[in-house]
Length: 317
Length: 285
Image 1 (tube, one colour):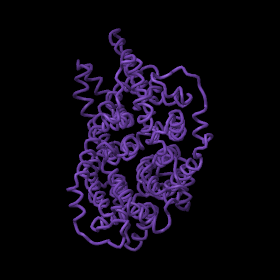
Image 2 (spheres, chains in turn purple, blue):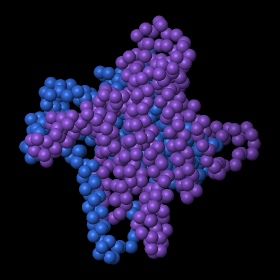
Image 3 (cartoon, chains in turn red, purple):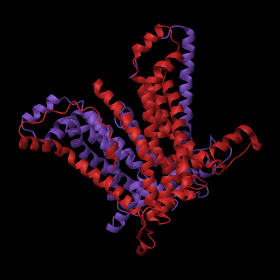
């Protein structure tokens, strides 16, 4: 189903077809053979379940009452779209994704610019910076929930106490700003990802062009604004889109830090809850289909960006 | 990696350079601080870990680790660690077996419309996991595969195969075609060409691909949470046991989080140079 979004870059390196037809067909199959196991595997494991989800989404089906299964057409979609909780979770998903992606992109850009210069211990700093990204996501979420946010013995309140003395404020971070609590933990984990992509972008700049601009008297800001930023545009887009694809689907942080409570349930959590706890198979499937439609919008743009970078690499090679 | 630049001559520029270097160090330390604090806490006793303000200089102990490994009578983490190891290793191997020939057909002896095929693989990565979760759960329930580690192996393979195909086709593109042509002329069959010629040349790339697939499988929670229970529980699912507070347990949580993250940290640092390429699905080199 997703194949329709595939952009088709120029096909210049396809070899000429063999002269005789049967011989050519045989050769074509011989070329295709190594690809088939992977292709068949992917279609079977990723596309078939989605088709099943689509079918189930048209049924009124609660797993606790399996005999009452009936075709209901679009009723599940109607219910999902009018359900206040579900609509709220759509809003939460968008807010969470946009905040985390934008913040980690901006901080990641700053860090990439700092790391794009030579200084003592650059390798060490790079390693320190990517460490948050290399924690198991559940472990990172537990670290924020218990070790940093805990109102009684968490590090944040500990530092407040240390600085402000006995009268210092000791807020309960998670209940006071639940969504922000999740966002901060995710920004901390995703900033290194953005930094790595943007750093690769910075290091692929044409250094001669920058030197020439500097010779002509261009200032640091002018070079950044007119040379670096346009060059980085595609890398920024790529980081934003790949980040969005992952964060739209985030389950680990929401599940660990608030268990979907306090208005932080995003769509993946809601889908999980509606079939795993409420056993509403039809509703869960309809919500799942809606998540896919949302992701397709992002994915279409993402594929286009990857495709243009891919073509650029191919033409450079 | 770093482009050659003329060294700044003016002292003003040098001071600013020093300041920016210092800023980079500060940022690095700030990002690393929570991890460092977690490591320190894991070596404190539960009483010292839960003081406010924090006791930085408290004496060190391995009690948190002993508790985590079950000395206090809690569930042992070993079965879940072994499950994670089996699921991650087996799915990574399966990914390599499927992706290497596929990448060969997409970069060395190219099939027609090879870019379309590549983008089909990529598009499956954009399909949210929750979209297929319910049918997979129902299928597993009907076939008795619930709580079976091999179901996770299959799912993790499908999760990582697109990444591996994309990464490997960009690595295989660097293998000289003449060498492969020569082998084919000598009558070598495809498996021989792949294992004897392609794999050794592309080994660093294949290793990086394997490490990245291993990381993603090790980290996965949603499938594991829904599809496993007692027998096939993985390490991240074991960690979810720490979501609700259990009195004084901070050192234990820190020890658990660190031990379970250790394989990912090791794999990530080992694959550091190729990490961007893997994470950007080969789009960025």
